[in-house]
Amino acid sequence: MLTNWSTMSQAERDAAYNNNGAVANSAALIEARNTGSKAYRAANNTALDVPYGAAPRQKLDLYPAERPDAPCLVFIHGGYWQRNSREDFACYAEGVRAHGWSVAMPSHTLAPDATLTEIVGEIHRALDYIAAKGGAHGIAGGRVVVSGWSAGGHLTAMAMSHPAVSAGLAMSGVYELGPIRDTALNEKLRLTDAEIETLSPLRLPVVQKPLAIAYGTRELPALVADSRDLHAKRASAHAVGALVPIAGADHFTILEELRKPDGALVKVLQSLL
Image (cartoon, rainbow, N blue to C red; front, side, top):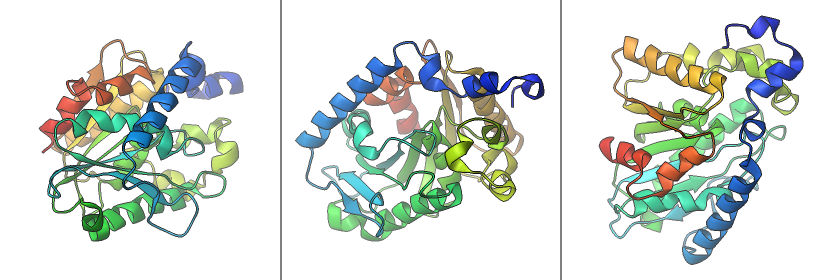
């Protein structure tokens, strides 16, 4: 949490987590991302919209590698748990797939149609499906590395306890939920005291699996602080995982390091195997 949180106005608190507002060309970056992802899905459409549950958004896009036993990246989209979908992020499968990985991208029900407790549970259900039925889609036997951006970074940290997950890369995440309740984001999330206590990675016991934590040096201070604090907590528990500041990157451009085969975040994922 920012040290002056208690003295900030409501507008200042909202701005502290407003990534779209903090990046001047965010609309253009989002449009380019969505356009690139639409093209990528169209060109790699052999296993899209695979249901892992009965709800409309409980679906996976699967991009299998040539080898069924290749490592699998499970990428969780962002959007403060209340917007966006896997379809908008398909292009970020490119980087690791160039190294022979499979990629799985789940969507989840959005708030307010689901609580954050339910959203975390849905990601675990998607991982259950990949572990049990991934082989039917050419994904079986390889190590599963979970990664996500923004709210997906939070969901990545919450997914580390899943037995199928061997390692993780959390990017630009929110790891302490207390301040979120004091912002306009909570109008749809409606966080409870219990959720803040049990779904804030900074309040939970450390999972002893490798977890790299990345952020852009031009991110909002609240996200930078959360990233550093989570890494420090894990380091104090002797947990494996690097802190990865991406120089010059903002909340949106950091993802380009996941899209490029030689990108810094692709190299981090490779190091987790």
